[in-house]
Amino acid sequence: MKKIAPSSDINSCDQGGSWLYSDIVKDHFFHPRNILIDEKDYESDGIGIVGSPACGDVMVVWIRVDAKKQTISDCKWRTFGCASAIASTSMMSVMATENGGLNLKQAKRLTPEAIMDRLGGLPDRKYHCSVLGHLALREAIADYESNQLEKVNSTKKTSS
Image (tube, rainbow, N blue to C red; front, side):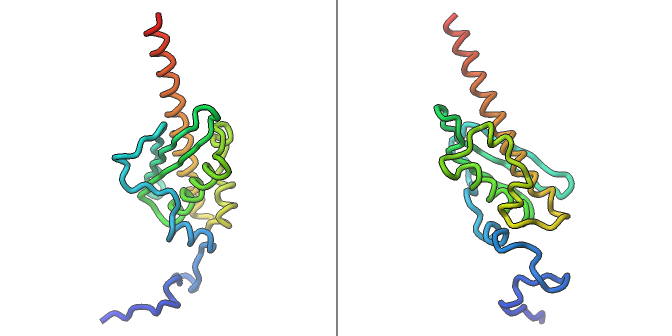
């Protein structure tokens, strides 16, 4: 019968016996913020979907936009990925919505480095995981902007 590791060893890795991630990464991995499990009743203004062939992760981000302020009022997400992808996207969703939300221009400029900095770093081989969240956010913003353009164009056609 296989022996289960005591709880003090639960965060140990086989590589040297220490957890490779910061406490902030652990917190966002074990307690992700703004995750959306079932989108069926969630109404968003934009959706972004990206994937990474390097690790097989798939990321979906849904945003709501305050149309008057052009800020992100809500940012939900779901990923099929590793701890780094989960923690990075959780942090990205916090960054996008804190203090009244990033305006769309700021949100488009959100970088993986800024996300990793707020997380207290990621192992080098996990850098690509931090890229998924900000790329999906950009896709969601592009989707929102495309939807707004379609609304303007359809309004022009009906008023002509």
